[in-house]
Image (cartoon, rainbow, N blue to C red; front, top):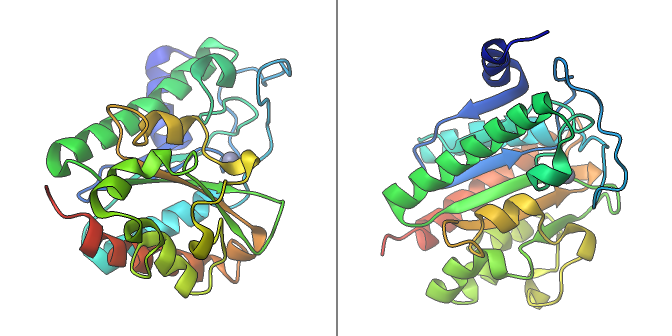
Length: 255
Ligand SMILES: [Zn+2]
């Protein structure tokens, strides 16, 4: 039987990567992990809403590489929280009720969300607002990145303060991704179109995004396979960092 103290040690070292940040940027990747959680049974209750156990392949690596590129581009670290545990044991992008089925699972789930809460809280304290990017992978369209903002609700702070161009302008985060050849859905020109229902922003975006009183702006990014292959992954990370650099110079102004 594994003790709670040992599990705590394991969580930070082996099961969750946590980097404290210096920028108003938070990067999260809940579905890219492959490790088993000690003494945690596999999730089996398919009656839970949105029960999924598949891996978001390489989304963890893409998040990690992006954090490195952001530090290179901006000279400071973003906050980074990456699940190394497999979604077969815990789904951190669901409510605790729906994403866990055991005590060991709940302990790991809570640590992931504690780290997210701390990151978002610190960003709010130091910068008033910021941007959380929740990294995922999808198999529906390899050449597209699906935007998930609960149809712009989770980026409401920036949108209200700076207007449409902060979301669809050429120097905005999404605009700059598009101008570097990354296809975003909905596209910039129709940015108010409804998002794809399967990818429109899950528990993390809803909980830590601008829809929440204690949140910051949040975007779920669902990357197709063409952006996260061995050959393309580091280029994708560089483009995301360039887009964040452009966005932060214009839309991270203190109020
Ligand atoms: Zn996912």
